[in-house]
Amino acid sequence: MKKFIVMLLSIVLCCGLFTGCGGDNESAAKDTLTVAIAKEPKTLVPFESDDSGTAPITHQYCETLIAVDGDMNLVPGLAKEWEQIDDTHYRFHLREGVKFHDGTPFTAEDVLYTLQKCVESPATTAVVGPIDIANCKVEDEHTIVVALSDVFPAFFNVCTLDIMGIVSKEAMEKDPEGYAAAPVGTGPFKFVEWKTGDYIKMEANHEWWGGEIAFDHLMLRYIPEATTRVIEASSGNADIANITIVETSTVESDDNLQLLEVPGLGTAYVSFNCSVKPFDNVKVRQAISLAIDKEAIVKAVYGEHGEVSKSFLSSVMPGYYDADSEYMKYDAEKAKKLLAEAGYPDGFECRLVGSGDQDQAIAEMIQRYLGEVGITVKLDITDFSNWLDALVNGKQEMYIGGWSAPSGDVSEAFCAFDSEQMGQGG
Image (cartoon, rainbow, N blue to C red; front, side, top):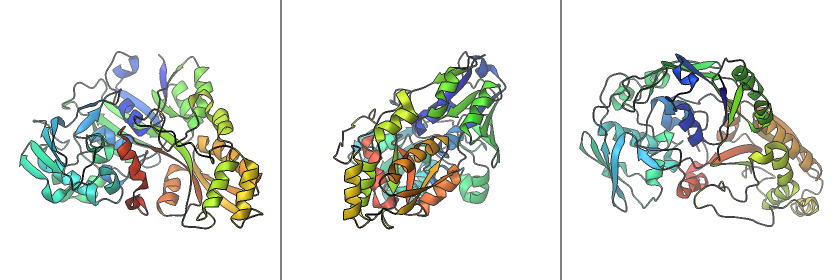
């Protein structure tokens, strides 16, 4: 039997893969499907974190009003139909007979409650758009009109995001802490257990409205080292594994493994904490951009699996535009000149935070390039949780990160630049 090793380049692709139950392959006939994941979730509540470790997990048990297919087309989720009434009002007709995992019925009140939580949460408020909770209206148990305070073209697409997974109002109001430890949703899998640092166990929801599930248990094993994930798949201890670019050649040379690769909506980048010196100086940021040979890094780390971005948007994104500038090219001499103009003729020391094997390879190249213009870079390649903690608490100076607009809508992508994204949760 061929095992499946999957390079996941965005939240959307990750979620779509993990729920691909059914089919004729041998792994689908197993009692337990085991998936080796690279990141643990920050939380089990969808709207409490907008990160790539949380979304693929909550996606398994929480569902959204609208879903997307493999071609990024909007398809029915918990809403069987929807319509735009005018520029700021949207009506959703919900599925009837759907139940949460604890047996309570799914209704429009759960939708309204979830929307309110998304608006209130620092992690999601800038992403979900201008939802006007006070003017939303539950017309009946299975119909709700959602009001916006302003025009928001991406709203339908945003309704597909895992941060908007519908939670049970009754369960959360009854015991918020209990829900966070053992969440219930309407999705294809029921949460069973989370052993921190080890695994997350789920079982199939055979009453799921979406159809038959071909295995009874889903085991998500947390394995931070990409090489180890490959070994586990090759030995048969995992059916699916999330890998990085670094491991592609190993996978391709292993007859027991199959590499699945699809274009991603994500962009990797180096970012600066502009509230601390010297990164509050635009000339320093421009110098760093000029000092790094991006073409060389992509060739060395990504090979044929990536390309140099000329925008914060992925080039496969609908609405992509080329934001090429004079600071995109590699020019070490001009970088030195800008550093001198900024008041740092002899450079400075700084810390670069990253997470994972792939970031390690990129960081080492960045360290070398910046060293050539006088900037001494100390590397801090840590696990995902510590990386995330550094970002949300402003502990970073520079960091390697990634961003995608998983809804597939450019309007949603711009939320990264909203002032509400500053500080905790952003």
